[in-house]
Image (cartoon, rainbow, N blue to C red):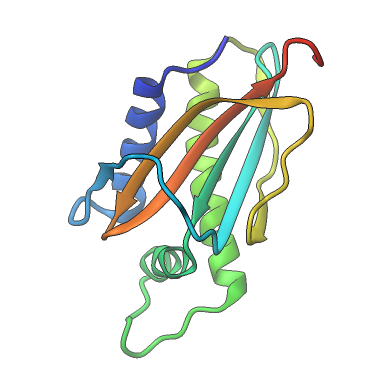
Length: 151
């Protein structure tokens, strides 16, 4: 069992708007190349088992941190710790909402955040992929589930 692309899109758009505001909407985008500057993932374990990840360009991750912390673009700099916290919180919110769509009971892990791409377990396959853009830059939200032959 896996969430539908429609469900994942709805969750991501809702979290994105509540987290970052509605002035820059999240837009659907055709799959393409993404220069991953930051990424984060959470796993869900229990009746449903899977993982949710977010991959972002560096500039987008920094802007998310600025907005989350209420920093001024012109005055305040944002550090890697702030970016890691913001990207981790974003994937935590998206992952928690995806978890709520799936059969339970289940538990959500703490986020794993990386400058670059977070490594995935070898026993998972991509079940759902949402390619989108925000403020003109691409991003990727993926849901992975255990491979049926390895789970």
